[in-house]
Image (cartoon, rainbow, N blue to C red):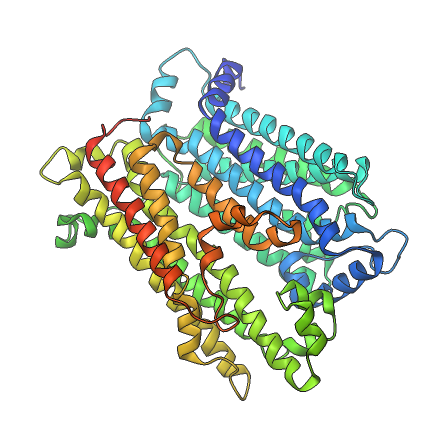
Length: 552
C-alpha cells in the first residue's frame, strides 16, 4: 500500500538536520544547561531535608499543584529527596519548552516548506510521497533522543543526592517522549491546516488545552482526568520516587497512533493544501495597508491582542489569591525568602506587619516575572522584519517606493507601543482583581503603575538588542533568545548561585528599581533608555545599508 512512499527518507533526514543544525544545537544546549544547572542550584537554595519538606508542603495545595503538577513522595521521608522536589517543580515547565521546540521544528520542515515552495522542488525529484514528513519525524526522534540522553546523564553527573542514574535517565526519557508526542500532534495539524500559521496556532492551542486538562485533574486529585493530557501522563512517572515506566510506554503508543494518522492524511491530500480550507480574503484591501505601520499591525494584531488579553488575565489570576496569600505562605521562612524577603526582615517582622510585607514582596516578585513573560511578544514583533526577509515577502515591498528604514519602523514602533500596553494590562489586571477580592486593596494604583512602567526601559533595551541583531548580524537572529534566556536565568536563579556582580550587570532588568521595595531613581532608567535608542539606531543604520538577503 505504501510501496515507494518512503524512498530517500534518510537522505532528506540528513538534509533537514544539516539545515537546522545551529537552531537544534542552541535549543539542546539551552534546555540541557537549564536542567543541569538548576539541579545543584535548588540544592543550594533548599539545603537539608527539613527545608525541602517545608517548601514542598507549602506547594502541595490545589492552586500550586494545578500550576506545576503533583509532588510525590511527601508522605515518606525515605524516598522524598532533592530529586523528587526537583521533578515536581521543574518537569512540567521543561516539557512545555520541549513541546514548543518540536512544534516549531515540525511546522518549519513540513507546512512552512510547502508554503515556500521547497517541498514542491523536493517532490519533483525521485522521492517518496511522504518522504519529507517521514524525514521530519525521524529527525524529531533523533533530536529528542539526544536531548533525553544529555539531560539525564547531565543531571546524574552533578552528583546531587537523591538524583541517581536511574531516575535521571527516566527524567530525560520522559522529556524526550513528551516532546515527540507533540511533534506527532503538530505533524497531524500540518495536514489539517492550509498554512504554517494555522498549524502552529492549532498545536500551541492544543498544548494549552492539555495544560488546562492536567491542571483541573491534578487540582481535583483525579488521575483519570489528568492522564487525558500528555503532561499529566508524564508526571505520573513519579520520577526519583517510584520511577514508573508505563506512562512513557503510553506516550510512545499515542505517538505512534497520531503519527500514523498524519502519514495517512499526507498520502491523500494535495501538496500545499489542507483539509481545513483557508478563509477567502477581502476583495479589496483596506486603506490602512497602504502604510508600513498598517501592514505591521495587520500581520501582528491577532498575536499581540491575544498576548494583551492573556497578560491581563495573568495579572488577574495573581490578584485573585492576594486575600489568602499571608495564610497560604504561613510562617515558612523558605517561602518568604523565595519571594525575596531578606533574612534580616524576617527576624524583625512582627505579626501585625507580616501580611502587608508578604503582599508587598510578592507583588514585586510577580512584577518581575510577568515583565519577563511580556518580553516574548515584543521581541517577536521586533524580529519580524527578518522573518519577512527569509520568507521572501519583504523584497516585494522594499523593491518599490517604501524606504527600508520606514518598512522596519512599522514593526519596531509596534514593539515599543505594545511594551507599554502590556505593562498597563498586567498592572490593571492585578489591581482590579485584588480590589474585587479583598476589602482593602493593598496596592496603590499609581504606585503599581509606576512599578510596572519602570521596567519599560529594560524592555526597550531588549527590543534594541533585537533590532541591532536584525540589522548587523541577521544570521545570528537566534542569539536574542539566548540573551533572553540569560536574563531570565539571572533574574531568578542567579542569586542562589552567588554569581559575580559584573554578570548581573549585563541584564537590563538588574538596573531597574523594585518599587516599592526600593526607592525610585530615574538615572538608571535614563541610561537604559539611551542604550536602547543607541542599539535601535545602529540596527536601523545597518539594516538600511545591508543586502536584503544577507544572512540567509
